[in-house]
Amino acid sequence: MASPQLSVLIVTFNTRDLLLQCLQSVFSDAKRSGRTYRVIVVDNASTDGTAAAVRAAHPSIELIENPTNVGIAVALNQGLHACADSTHVLIMNSDIKVLPGTMGPMLDYLDAHAQVAGVSVQLVNPDGSPQKFRTSYGPVLFPERFDRIFRLRFFGTTFHLGRRALYNEDQVGGFDENYFFFNEDLDWSIRAVRRGLIFHYLPNLPVVHYVGQGRVQNRYRIMSELYPANLYLYTKFYGRFIASLVHLAQQIELSLRLAILRFRAQENSSEAEAYRAAIEKQRRFLSKVH
Image 1 (cartoon, rainbow, N blue to C red):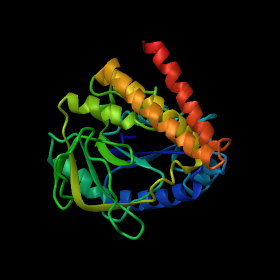
Image 2: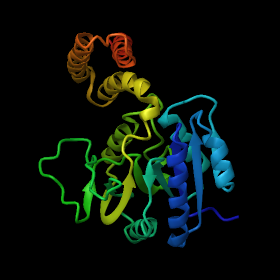
Image 3: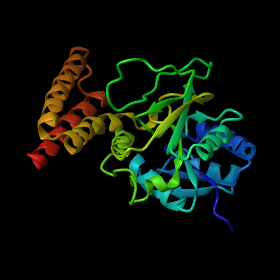
């Protein structure tokens, strides 16, 4: 059997109903694209019946079931390994609904522009209003116009189509598995741009993003992991001094958040516990790098 031209890769955790809607939209639009394709779902130990529902609704899907929640970076690398023979890979959240006529033009654009490594499109709310989303890992002096093509400096994991070879070790490589949820795509984008790779935003191809729904089930662990993940990223790319400044700023922020929760008599809440865990994880991280 010939290798598929397109692989669609989705990582999920306890988003069964959103995932089923997402998959229905993916299959519908992938058929319109006229390309051969496969769909890969990596389930990070969901407890809401996700795996059984996917098998029942879409038995052709390649389903990877992790016994524990290994985080987004590890799960994405599992999916990328499973589609190593594909020409293109579309990485997307389970809280995305693909609108008709989206994937075909994205693939056509990459076919017509060999110098472009990947493309992204507009994210919109369920009511059709545009969402703000990141286009660069650095400062942006002038806002981009989303009615035209422009060059991206951030290639995230919400809904992005790229050439599969980008994730090979002789190019950018896979995602850094030191990240649990946030910053894995920021890390990858920095590496990609430093290699001189070009990514484009394509207008007039919106997809619906039910923002935040993909992480709401694991909110407090994600909160506790974010702050040390920031320190790891700044240490890796910008050095210990900058990371120390980031640590100071984050310590002040976390202390203020905890003070507010104490004032509200919520010092024993899950949110407060997450912030205390973040402080301790920051301390442990810095003790290893200093």
